[in-house]
Amino acid sequence: MAPNVVSTTLPEEHPEPQQDTKPLEPVQIVWRNVLLFIALHAAALYGMYAVILNAALTSWFYGVFLCYMTGLGVTAGAHRLWTHRSYKAKLPLRIFLAFCNCMALQNDLYEWARDHRVHHKFAETNADPHNVNRGFFFAHMGWLMAKKQKDVIEKGKTVDVSDVWADPVVRFQNRFYVPLCALCCFIVPAAIPYYCWNEKFVVCFFGAGFFRYIVCLHFTWFVNSAAHMWGNKPYDKNISAVETKWVSAFAIGEGFHNYHHTFPWDYSTSELGYKYNFTTFFIDCMAYIGQAYDLKTASKESVEQRKLRTGDGSYSMLDKKHKE
Image (cartoon, rainbow, N blue to C red; front, side, top):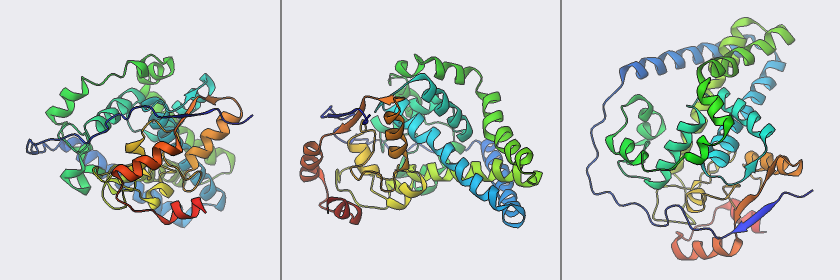
């Protein structure tokens, strides 16, 4: 059973970059969040220390597995499924992705989808939650330590996310978000190595818990920062989003950002197949077993036309090798 892929030329979410002539509003620091992130990073550093000195080889492989599961909750779940509706998923897959999303602890699916739709619609303006024009640190993680800009709140009210809320899985996660995240992000990941192969508690709790959590956070954050700053723009030279293969490697496929912002409905977020894109491989596997369907992708013709019309003329080595 081959994946049910639908080639489409759907209209772009924002065909032209938003223009914002207003000066950047001053940032209001939320010190409670600053202290929280300091504490989380301190716990993660302690976890890294414990893992390096004490973790069994099995725990290292387990940690990598956890990172992939955590990442899928964001990439295949919150991002490509619920935010962009680039494919459809049956209930078992939606439940699995919601579980993985709780492991990521990056706000509930409804809030994540709302903020990301605002980011796409008002990219690089005062209404962009993590506006890259404010610099690397703000786009990376500083926005989470600052009060939301007035424009972000006001424009956020204009973005329709009723389709996301209509999913009972999303509503359930939203209602029980705190206990679900405590269970999925820390308790279960720590309990498995502790009880299954007698791993040390400090490795389980601080390693599989805090260290893994912070590492996965930064992998996601690089999409908002590095993937809007350093790379080429073969599809649209007028936007900040770029193609960054090392970000794709860490974020399991989310670094082909110039393509994604140009064709946001494409479930694969690139035209390069599975290269640096484990998420696309996962979705195709789910389609093969009937859990994912109606996979949307931009037609080759529309991609090539867009390259010629607005691209910067660059073609990455990945693109060249793919065509060969």
